[in-house]
Length: 259
Image (cartoon, rainbow, N blue to C red; front, side, top):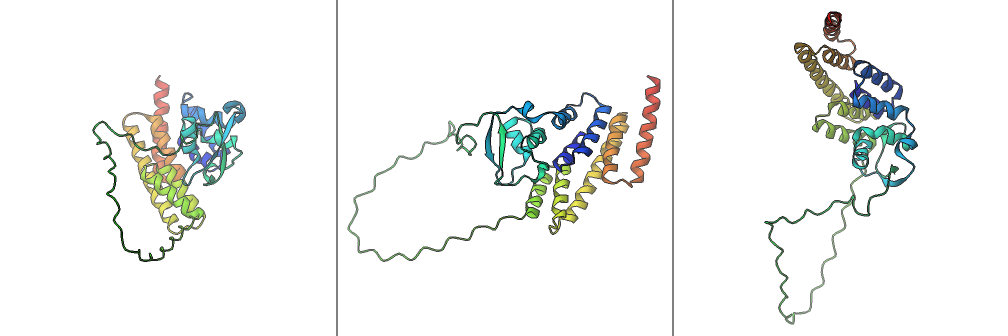
């Protein structure tokens, strides 16, 4: 449920996320992610993050989760960072946007890619040998005009950016985040996005169904119920999920009575 709340907060659905977090805490009051997300919703951003900050320009393919992980050490702190910047929908952060990042600015150039250090077994660069004396050469022939520079690649549309982000999440096996980005691409009428929404939703349903049955077999009834909840969130009319969830709820009630 907490992971579902993450997706809702990414989409700016704070009220739905709050309800999902409350359900997660009702099942497990020590759930670290759920408690962290609730603090991010209810807390004061300036008090939680401090008033000292520096400016950061969002890079192409950056997300608030990646930025929070880079500067705050926790990818799930993206929502308090969004509120710190008065951003209502975190998933809509785009390249070129300027954000306030809490804390002191890192040293100049520290965020740029650094060359890999030379290993112990890496050979030293060859010494530079002075060229031989120049020999009188015939008059040079005029060089041909340089070829024109290639045209810059066209900037991606919002739908294309969403598709690229979704494909990246899918390659990382984060199907929940991939589904959210494919939905955003579909809402922008990106070709092929709706087919990916349907395919990834089916993969997630299969994954949660397997998790629910595995948890039930291990007598982890709370885990089984939670997994069936995830299935029903994706497919509310799934009769099998409804029946299996009722079975797990009934068995859990009996077990609780015996304690």
